[in-house]
Image (tube, rainbow, N blue to C red; front, side, top):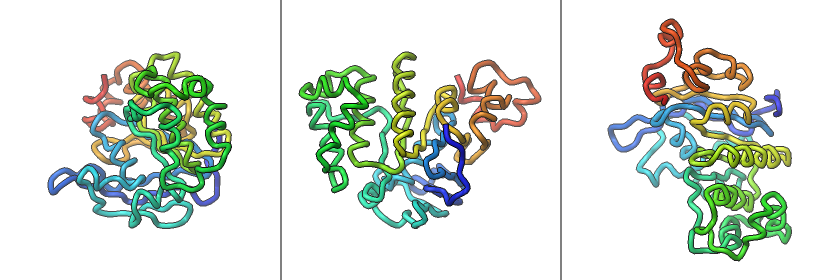
Length: 267
């Protein structure tokens, strides 16, 4: 894991507010940084605003009838909250959506080539080979329909498709969702390898053990606000996080310091 650098962050979100329609406020005054070359995790229960944060960063809020109500988003020093999703991809922000969402009737290789869409950087001859080197099983099954892959293989394909756009920042929405523990371990190892090649990451996860092992810094969202923030190593030992997210129940004194939706939203 890399430390948080002292340079200007690669991604800077300041005072972000998001509303869906006229009634639902999803985020309130949220500020998050991703340092150059860093891995940052965002934790929280269902409905805390984690996926909304990723949608705001990637520029797809309007597809869900959402809109920013305040704040700003900067990437590599440039303000991007006023530009469309395609321009954000071209600048180097690429999202791996929750649930993988591969094109089931296309082959593995056709899915990977789809990751090049709208991004001329992703047209170099070695792109596919880089993905196949990272994910040998995809190379072995390049002519197979993506819908016939296992869940873990589909997650690898979704990540590989994102890599075809050569991201500087990879946004990952619940990458461990629905996967067996051994497959999760493999995905985490692959993400570390991708990170080691120079890609920063913002990882949204309900699986706190996975996220805090992978990341170097983390934020906990509660009811659309940042409730806890700190170095991942410190949060792993924080009673508020450990007892709620890593097993066990908090005692009454600890529970009183945690917003109610976090206490109620955990299994």
